[in-house]
Image (cartoon, rainbow, N blue to C red):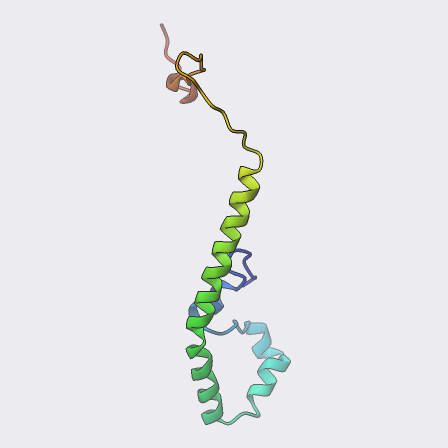
Length: 107
């Protein structure tokens, strides 16, 4: 239920359109739960419907924030890369696949 950096929203709110109410908040009412008691059912339904209609906008905002985050990660990674130009005839080190799999054979 914590906010994730790539989407700037909680996974629960992106799926259900509202923040989660913890069981502890039901037993010991928080301000959010207490205010619900003073709202009529019809007003509560209309408010909830309006929040659900805004859910698509929140999804688009999360997608946009995620794309900006990926660009930031890409830039941070590429900052440390060095361009290497190879010419025909240059010697390069080739990786031996048998060594990297850690499979030992007895001879």
